[in-house]
Image 1 (spheres, rainbow, N blue to C red):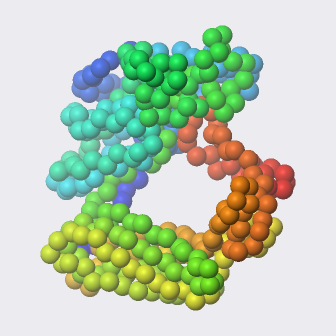
Image 2: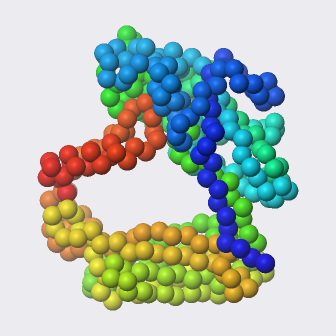
Image 3: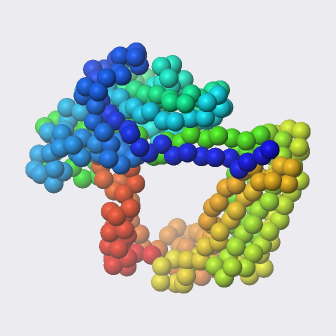
Length: 361
């Protein structure tokens, strides 16, 4: 009896707490309410929550960064309690952890994470009706203090490169007295959860990974290519592509019902609607739906948006888009807010309005 894979977003009842740096913790020691600060919205990094609780001053104040540097001297805990299907196998997915963290579920350490850029996916054999999740983030300042650069790297490589974390996140070397202005490069180090935390209940078969590409060929035709890794035996994988007018293109491929494996699908599109830079035409996009079937019922589905464009660079600073020469005007995009990596849609919209008014394309 196959059902479409269920994903539950853990976005409520998160709290944080500062603790002295420690290599390990006993989760049982942190079941009380003392010192915990709740997150009104989630995901949220430590400084988002401190700011919300007025534990750090308003960001626009002169000397703001100097008054926040103390946060680098502590480890930080996140915790939440969530409901689960009793006895069900599940997967915990952490889309973005910043950066070095130990993950505890129901009192047991289940994973260690050490890469800002990669998500963490952990298979859990069995859940309880109520489950306790604690994440112990280690002070980056403390970690770096215990690391040594190789001799041949000294004077050539910034020590922050020893940890997989953006270089924006480290105070500049010449900022001994702190900064008067926060900006995109803070003078302290962001830490915490900056993307979604999910509980996934997989079915007998699922789509483990996809590589979906929209290709625009020199003769003006297009094609959509899909490579997918299937986990568990399934019967069929189907790809549907819809343009903005509702016109549909589809194709499917048989899977091996007895085992996991990789499959490919290709769909030709005779006259694709094109994506153009601003000022040259529309930014047409297509909806793509990838569905996995077993016993004639869907058991997993992924939806994406794709667009057709071909960019060529025949010589230095010369660009052709969809066969037409265009001069590109753009800028470097720094973090929207230096103290957090959580996406801020309102700030982003304001920024892109200014970008448009500056005639960037």
